[in-house]
Image 1 (cartoon, rainbow, N blue to C red):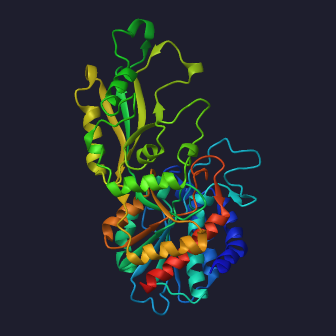
Image 2: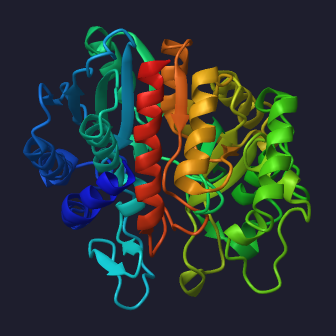
Image 3: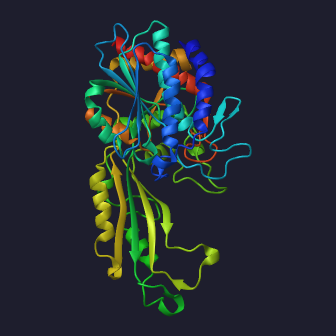
Length: 467
């Protein structure tokens, strides 16, 4: 199995993945003209051509596109003999990408695949261009090595980096085709090192709000107006103090918090014990800056089970070199909330709205825009067959015990699937590591780890069919 997977990666996957990196397939949220740009369609066609050339017996290949929505690529592979009664395995990934950003190292660039030792650099290499290739290679390895797998559908969407806004419509549209989903494999995640298989056991939800505070119809001389007219930024700052303790970062609205389950706290302790220093060392803090806590368990829980607020954008502020002595008319901030996996995102965003709109100081005008929210996800307990399979691949493929950990990011698809298929088992994993640089410059894929993850998925597909 391992040698088959390694050969497929070297001879077939790597050349095509390099071609995919070259396509600037920005997610719709970053390219409003994506239909005219055509890059998402080009990415779909690129991977579709590779899948068609695999010639998997009985497989069907389709591009599904609902009106006004970004497309989905489906590879539908029939079950092997013996796996027909095991339901459907859904293997998920995405082809859309984050913006390129500046600051890439010398010799590297977002749309330039560069292979250095065991690292493949380029935007979309690790997040998440490799996933469709790895899922297909795992299925091929099972079939080529005498194993079994249930009917399998590889689903590659093109809107994940924008919050997967179109996926609910596609799940409704494809419900009958997907059938009885009993096993979900998501390859859009990773872990705290490259030494073992990491399972993502929870994902935070999210909420986003744009808030504008307006105090003037026209800007005024700050020397004349300040002291009589309230600063729009001061009003906005006081509203944020209702939501977050600025000294600690603690979120003050109870609707955004949940009790941390005992098993997830224990899991965090195991994670830190298995990979000490990986949490503190995951982020390039500026010289002299300390993390929020010196306790790595608390840091991990902060990033997986506690709510946070980040200001991710601002408007109404001139750059410092162009700032005059002017009291501005308004201040706008883009607020991004990460929510605990089991928090109700709709109730959370409603609580944020109340905090921002109620009893506004000086009766300043508050406008809220771009309000979005999505629930998180908490994995069900492992079925015996999956736990045995994980133990086996840990020994045979990785030579180290597998570990589970909560992930601070969000994959809305998992929450949707968890609600729709409550009896399914979930394998949320992937090749991302703590320094893979997803979303930022110098994104790279750890090729040996990607190959091991592919082999592990192949073994677990077989275990599922034989359960």
